[in-house]
Amino acid sequence: MSDSYYIRSKLYDRLFLIYIPLIAFCFVAAIVPMRNPGESFLNPPNTPVWLISGASFIIFMHVTLVFVRSHFNQTVYSKYPIRFTLIPIVIFLALALNNNLYLLVIPITYIWDEMHSALQTFGLGRIYDSKLGNNPLVGRRLDMGLCFFIEYYPHITRMMILPHDEFVKELEVFGSYTQIIYELAPKLVSPMVLIGICYILFYTYRYYKLVQGGYKISSNKVLIYTLTGGVTIFTVCNYSIIEALIIGNLYHSIQYFAIIWFMEKKNIIKKLKLTKLNYSYIFGIFIVGTSIFMLALLRLSTESITFDITNNLPIFGAFWLTTSILHFWYDGFIWSVRRKEV
Image (cartoon, rainbow, N blue to C red; front, side):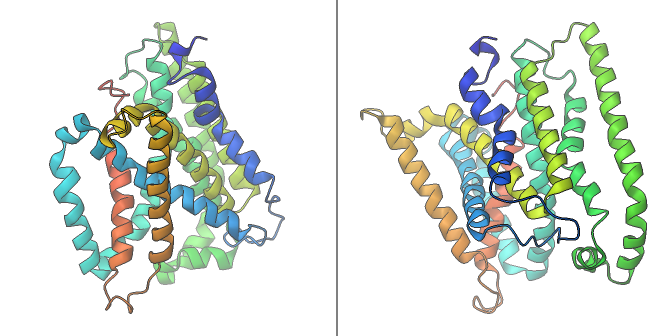
């Protein structure tokens, strides 16, 4: 398969986009043993602190990197100037001045984060299919549904069979209904697994019909969806939620780094006025990399500052929560296979 069927090149895509879920899993699996029966699913005893901290750094770095696309790319910026200037200020002030709103939005962003990761996988698959000349609208909803089932759905299903104390801790927000939910949850596992299998069979059948009508399926899409789904399912079954989140966020972030660098490196060099320098790309990587590293370090240092220190206003937390919201939101419209922007 020639490089024209890849986003950047065969080697680049396979290393940083297609096989990276498997690479991330192997990296973590080499450090952390599988969870033994009876061990905590939420608070694993064998996950090194340095691994959690390192993964957090990479995650926070990739969150900040979205602004390279939204604000450095003049074509993108000119389309949505209000969204990139006024709206962030409004969101920050709303979160910083209202504790209840701030606390309400936090769990919503956790869910949004997982959906956002699944949609990135979806987008990569759609790009590979478009490289074969397919209509970008055909099969779009099928792929979106599959990415939900292979990347987010396994986490939901696994949560249904948590030990009692961990289940209660996670769902204490439901108060007196928590025990009822706990007794009902295990009964939902088999139907949920069956629903997932049925969707995959439906997906396979629908694509079989599309292929008969002339649609061409990219082997790269098949690979990235299969590896992502396989890694996710195996991880949630055999590791704790911490390792599952580390693995998922590692490959998601590295994919994001790779896409940003390929798509935006010329804009980075131009905005930083490095075009006349030798080794301009190296300088660009160093400047952007150092900047997002320092911002990630600042986030780790300030995000957990308590309300009391800030006179009962979550100023630091609200700022970083705003950056996460903007990352998830912006990625929903600054990249589009349908508009041929990637």
